[in-house]
Image 1 (cartoon, rainbow, N blue to C red):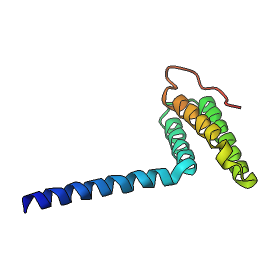
Image 2: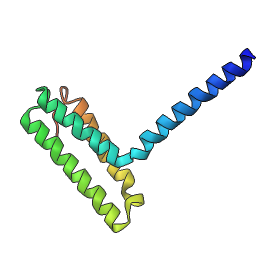
Image 3: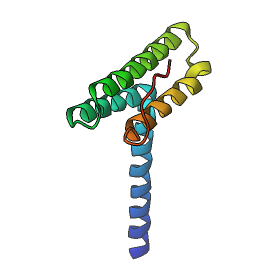
Length: 107
């Protein structure tokens, strides 16, 4: 009986972990854009980002958002997803490592 309970608990934990992972993946690019927007806003509010740095990062994010929306409109998201994810990765690194390296425009 104990073995069945343990197995049931393990299966339940695996299902919960899988559903959380699937939810994060479902957000995809829009979720990452939203997350970076929040990080930039928080960094500026806490004084970790100067107004100029926040402006540059915000400009990058606007460019990425526009690129994403245009790719959807053209029906080329599948081809351009790698480039968009790469730009999101770079912008995210700049937000996180701003203290060690200056931010720069991606466009």
